[in-house]
Image 1 (cartoon, rainbow, N blue to C red):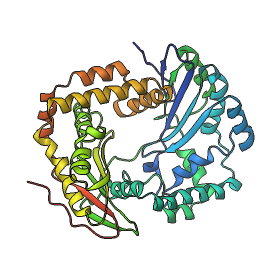
Image 2 (cartoon, helix red, strand yellow):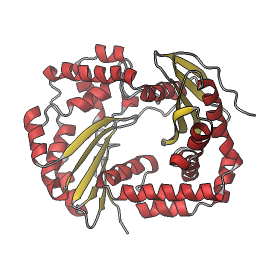
Image 3 (cartoon, helix red, strand yellow):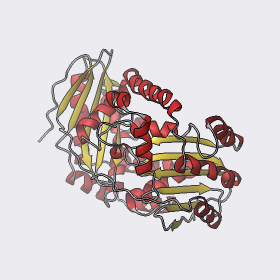
Image 4 (cartoon, rainbow, N blue to C red):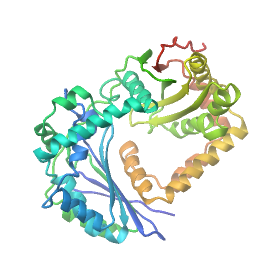
Length: 413
């Protein structure tokens, strides 16, 4: 059985370490309280710019020297703008962590944020934003979240074009100074590592790092309702959202099983009912997005303009219809699928580092794979059906992206 060690430093940084026997790799996820919800008014895109500039030189190394040093250690790394965090992720051989960690710490504590690197970084961010026009499946979910959750929870991690164009390097430096602080930061490490050694190394490297920041209120201000985004596409892209339990809710795992019945691969109800039986769309799926205070179910379907009205109608019918109950066979397939994904996650040290860091933020404690599997096994089909019957969605936010508007669906009473 795996054990997760935890330690909180005097400056507020929380360290989580899950040693794994029989592996040689090490995964690292560092969640910093600098997500897109923390961006100042008029600065939507600051987190995205900072996440890229962190690679453009840090500590006593310029961009090339810093990159060469990490490459020489075989470190695969990335940064990601998330709603509540700026995430730094890295994977390497466990034996390389003592050499790699100082370089990663420099990215957080002393990135150069040089003025001459700012404009190329801005152009990359604008290109990513413009590339959304060529990825309507992604764009429809981005647009759906904005209308469902509102500001700041529904902000896109891509930023806003007018804000990106107006930002200056001084704005990113101020954001870094204010938000990249230890209090509220979470560092997860999993793999071929030794907890006391990692704890002591992190403590030495971050000695003197201090700071605290208040995070915004998790308020949902979206207008909801039904929306159309005109687009010159050959298909109609449809997004549907409704509220669901937040991650700390005891029913969150039950909700996760319900979504597995709906969208658990080719045997899921959405695939069989919307795609196979009716031939309404080429792609359909749903996901459960559980936050700390708010949870949501997000569904997508891609159809032709001619079949889009019926596709939207049937998609909403299926999201509601599951409240009438699932069969024992559907329940068993959902359990097996969920536990199979847990096993595969356990074989990836990077996935485990990300999972324990995420758990710490959402639940205030990390969970082992055994704990999660036990929670899944404790759920019965009767419990799932009772939950679904008591949580029948009746208010949806819907959005169609394509050449023609669709009539708003009329959920069954």
